[in-house]
Length: 333
View 1 (cartoon, rainbow, N blue to C red):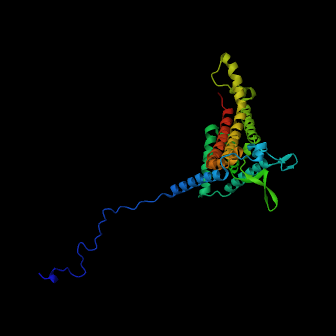
View 2: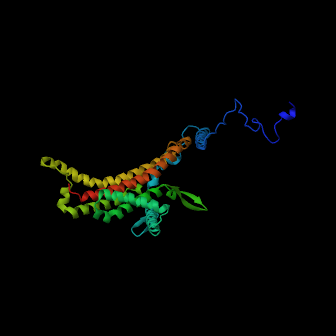
View 3: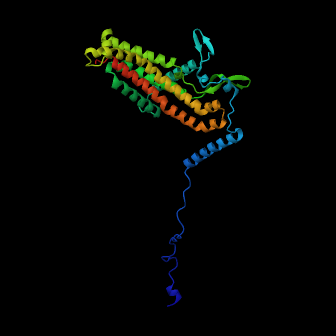
């Protein structure tokens, strides 16, 4: 047979033509690189370790305390002092008053803004507000009857928002530290710091005192003066043990005022002090620069933990305890 006869027609490919070539035995899938998150983490870790090494090389490990630390002029509690800036009549204007005014302005402005923009088809902001409304409404519904809900739900929701806003702005650095200043175009500007009005015990005390007066008033109005005192006793307590339980119950009722105050005050104060210590103050006190850099990630972690969780948690606890105490004042044991 001739070669012409055995050749395939023009334009027709043989089964082997155009078929993919088999992969080489040693050719595998390409290796995937390191993830972006891991790269960022390793970069930060390297910068942190490298920074410690640099500080040790530059300053050594021998303490170099500042003169103010040695003399006792510098104290970590200085940032919580309320220096009077000026007076308006009997009111001494300081950073605590400033933070309260900012909180009031933001709370009123936020609620007014939202109330004027309610729509039949809600946007993202309105959805978030409605979730908050249902959340606070649930707190009231679980602890108050219908009449008390209508009367005190606005107060409970406002307390929640007010304390939450006060706590959150306490993690925004503002130029309010009049004890430490810096020069800007020849003017002395207060240093930036984070400060919360709750770290002054007077603020949570006034809030707690208002709640204490309210639930005492509701209890007396509902039961009468002697009936309210009697209602503080747990049901089923009779006999001589009443003489022991009764003073304890009276005392515990007044301790609610202290617990509401201290819980809010102590948590915010401790959180801000931890942030300051881990953010650099501990290194200043011991006089080691590398300690400041080494503890900085822990300061950032505590800052995020406080700002994200504790700020909202403390507002929630104060608000729900307000509802519980109001509801308990009108219950019959």
